[in-house]
Amino acid sequence: MADPVFNIGLSALRASRQRLETSGHNLANVDSPGYSRQRVRLTSVSSLGPGGKPFGAGVDVGSAT
Image (cartoon, rainbow, N blue to C red):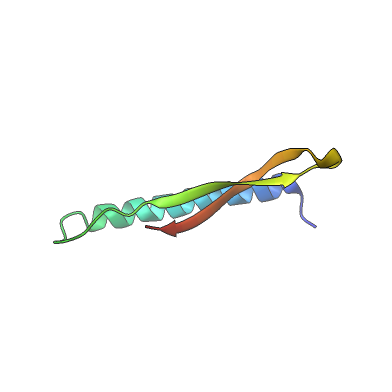
């Protein structure tokens, strides 16, 4: 199993990449008739640690809406 810290960092990089791609898409289509801005929905991922205590486990990237 991968290191949890590695997974947190990887999820952050994926989220940043998706937001950057969506920003580029928005900029490229800003003058298109009928175009509306897209947004990426990010949600936090939590997990249970030792003793059943919750801790952050990264971010989940939703679809662009």
